[in-house]
Amino acid sequence: MYEKLKGEILKNIQVPNFQKHLKISLIDFGAVGDGNYDNTEIFKKAIDHCYKVGGGIIEVPEGVFLTGPIHLRDNINLFLRKNATIRFIDDPKKYLPVVFTRWEGVECYNYSPFIYSYGVNNIAISGEGTLDGNCNNKNWWYWCGKEEFGWDSGFPNQNEDRQRLFKMAEEGISVEERVFGLGSYLRPSFIQFYNSENILVEGIKIINSPMWCIHPVLSKNIVIKGVTIESLGPNNDGIDIESCENVLIEDSFLNNGDDCIVIKSGRNADGRRIGVPTKNVLVRNCSMRDGHGGLVIGSEISGGAKDIIIEDSLMDSPHLDEAIRFKTNSLRGGNIENIYAKNIIIKQIKNSVLIIDYYYEEGDVGKFVPSIKNIRLENVVSMKSSYGIWIKAYERSPVEQLYLKNCDFLNISFGNYMENVKEIDVVNLSIESKKLDMRVKNIEIFNFY
Image 1 (cartoon, rainbow, N blue to C red):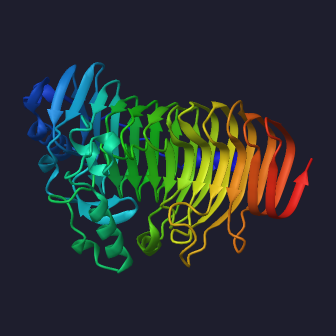
Image 2 (cartoon, rainbow, N blue to C red):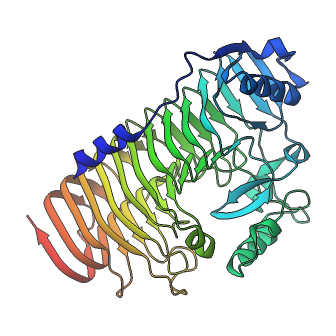
């Protein structure tokens, strides 16, 4: 099943091709790369011109090109030469008018993502240059409401707007009425592809994001390759794949203030209303350093997720909380199945190699019971962690079919904890723990070979 699924994912992905398209330089449209000149209209003119002639490659040369939001159109490859930097203006007013977006799994109108597409086909962001969100504790980051990111008493923050958005979705208020932007404090994603197809992000470096870094939503055929993401701000997830299909993430390095690579599918009522799972995702040859989790499923997972593979990857940091993380609850719900992790090396992490948590944030206070089944770890080697396996599911909805083969969990501080698992199959598992503690509760079938 594993090899068949991997083959199907690779077969179904179409990589955008721009070999026959026009190639132009941003300089031809009057761009100035001195780090001070506002090139917002220059980017727009170059993109509109390429679109009108059927598409093209827009080369950004060496220099620092300051700009507001960039909206991609069909058949556009935004190509950054070596030593080219696109730096984004730190004034939120530049990211108006509002656009249709998804914010923490809920649809609304909000500030434009820094790079955005909607309903677009055959697009790329590529090259050897840098995308600098120019975000820090003095502008976008303090909106999270935390003192460590610059917030102080009397400063505005996102908390009221966040709760207002979630309430509107639960009450069924139309998306057209969920308008935020000016006067509100919901930070946009850095790059968001919405309802788009045939997407390539290759080679670039991303730093200083306002919030989530690369965020495809309801999109198909996505390749993210050879990307470096170093962004340690609040909610700075690296790559958030939300309600997408046929995704390849490979040869990339992630060092983030939040989760590294995340699978999502919408939050609560809004996620169920749209009802599109994320499926057919292959992550390979990636390296993760800081973050809340290496590969994460959730928490905005109400539309479900299935057929996800991570292989041949490295995780290593005392500031990486978890390696493989599932987070949901009975407000989120969602059906999650067929998750594969193979040939993973974990040199050190803070907490758990595998964590499945049905009590994330609000806990068990809803009526939408999550379901997780067929989780398979093979050749996963961890050299230092607090726990090997930590699972806390519901008795009425246990984790089903957890399979571990040829795994080594070494130098574990607190052993393992498992609560409500229907079936566990373990083949050749080595555990080296300072505290030989295997706490289990409500395990229906436990096969240890």
